Amino acid sequence: MRASFVFSEVVTGLRRNVTMTIAMILTTAISLGMFGGGLLLVRTIDKMQASYLDDVEVTVYLTQDISANDQNCTAEPCSTIRSSLENNQAVESVVFEDRDEAYERFQRIFEGQPELVELARPESLPASLHVKLFDPERSDVIVQEFGDQPGVANVDDQNKFLDRFFDLLNSGRDGTFIVAAIAALAAVLLIANTIQVSAYTRRTEVGIMRLVGATRWYTQLPFLLEAVVAGVIGAALGVVGLVGVKYIALDRIFEATGGAIPNIEIVDILFPVAPVLLGVSILISAVTGYVTLRAYVRT
Amino acid sequence: MIQLESVSKAYKTSTRPALDDVTVDVDKGEFVFLIGPSGSGKSTFLRLLLREEVPSKGRVSVSNFDVAKMPRRRVPRLRQTIGCVFQDFRLLNNKTVSENVAFALEVIGKPKHTITKVVPEVLELVGLDGKADRMPHELSGGEQQRVAMARAFVNRPLVLLADEPTGNLDPDTSQDIMLLLERINRTGTTVLMATHDHSIVDSMRRRVVELDNGKVIRDDRRGVYGVGR
Ligand SMILES: Nc1ncnc2c1ncn2[C@@H]1O[C@H](COP(=O)(O)OP(=O)(O)O)[C@@H](O)[C@H]1O
Ligand SMILES: [Mg+2]
Image (spheres, each protein chain N blue to C red):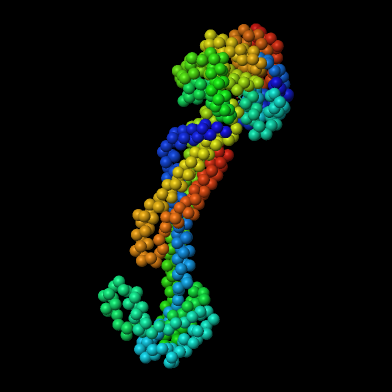
């Protein structure tokens, strides 16, 4: 196999049909960029789930009455609530937080907003029992059992809120994958079409090649490589696009969430996302090219 | 060198067979005219030898290739032992004369040093040594056919098939092409030429196989185109 021959055929082929080549590369880039974005989201969601679920608790807020009079949760009904929580199979630990502690925490959380801290009084904050579960997903049980007990003002389930939050992220991820799949379909059709056009414009050459006894490799490899080269360029553009989107948009958006969503790092994009995109792109373009040549181009 | 045994070929789209029970045997080094009116099956005959088509019935062999039965992946080998020229030259218009000839070697993976050596040799053989860098559109019809012949011959085929190679050329130029074909034949290459040019066949006095409606109606060792026509 003469590499120089195949190489020059590929370059001529791509240049002969510049507009089509550009369309093919851009569609591939968009599709792969979306796909890569989806992969990054998956990673982000995994990271967040791991770090959040560790800290998720159910908070049982106590009534004003208890908050004001029972400083240590030793009297009824607080002590009963606490001991039945402690004896619950699903519960790992229970920590009582009185009014003053709640106020301190409040001050810590809103350090940056002194006006808010000014407004708050310890008397306006409830005492609470912070319940940590073995399995945070099973918080429903606690909410049901203790929600209506005397002495309980309300039960706040962080897991419920997180579920909604992760649902949002998950549908973002799914949407990204769907758009990526649609763009991939467009890319595949464009590749198939480009190869057919390319084979048609080169039919005289291919005819002569077949006549003088060129093997299938020689007659078809240029077309196949044309698709693969476009695929590789598309993947590279897709990665560049992801890096661009990270700096232009994502960094700022995630920063605005105050660190709730961990930043996407460059290394996340370069590995493993970039090699995955490259591999997927080469695979798809090669398979599309091969199938197209099989189906539409006489050898 | 070339054998057809009871070969018939019926194209799917036509009811009448293009070749009908044809048996022909050509020895190594022979020069054979394949004659007959348009539609008599000459081109089909040549295409069967190239495995561009497979016969509906019968056996085709070229050199030691069992052409009809061989697996597809062996077809390139067969074609590398056969050179072809056509009425319409089939040159690549964006390549020079020598590039056109070199192309035939490049695509079968010949090394560069071989190509740079043999291309000028074969261009000299066909009388185009001064025109290696011309483009096809800068050549006369006869010269273009010489390029095609150089390309067909550059890999030293055992067999040269020519399908009406003089069909687009004036009589004088045709004569030059015939001289070149004779020269190639003298190197030991078996030549099979389809034509319906009377004067050429008559002047050469070579073996003539005549087809009519797909049947061999004559096979003369030293024939003329037709008696009384
Ligand atoms: N590809 C084809 N499909 C269907 N019929 C064909 C095809 N090629 C040739 N034929 C038919 O086969 C017969 C012989 O054609 P051909 O071999 O081209 O004759 P010639 O070369 O002597 O003019 C003709 O009747 C022609 O119409
Ligand atoms: Mg014909």
